[in-house]
Length: 133
Image (cartoon, rainbow, N blue to C red; front, top):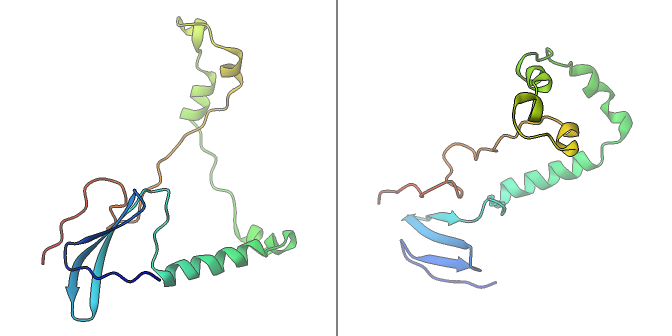
């Protein structure tokens, strides 16, 4: 284990992409700011261990174990409107534009959403919050 000493507002680099900055020191507590790419998961160790245990338990569920869960979950109301409207709307040459390619005609309509970081975090989403001393 590498042990480093840092004072407030000093930074440690891990590789080229991860910065760990000492934000505040109060008594026996040290506040660290971690700037890492969103593809790298950053958790406190106790949270990491809880996630690991839960993932191991989920991996052990057999097909027969889903019965009580499936019975408790009922499908929500069927959505209508925009998706079916988009599926029937003319595209390409029929809409006065360029002819559609065969691959486009068979492509499913999908909606992509961007995962949000939990509130109060700034992982790669912009400038870090300033912390008073």
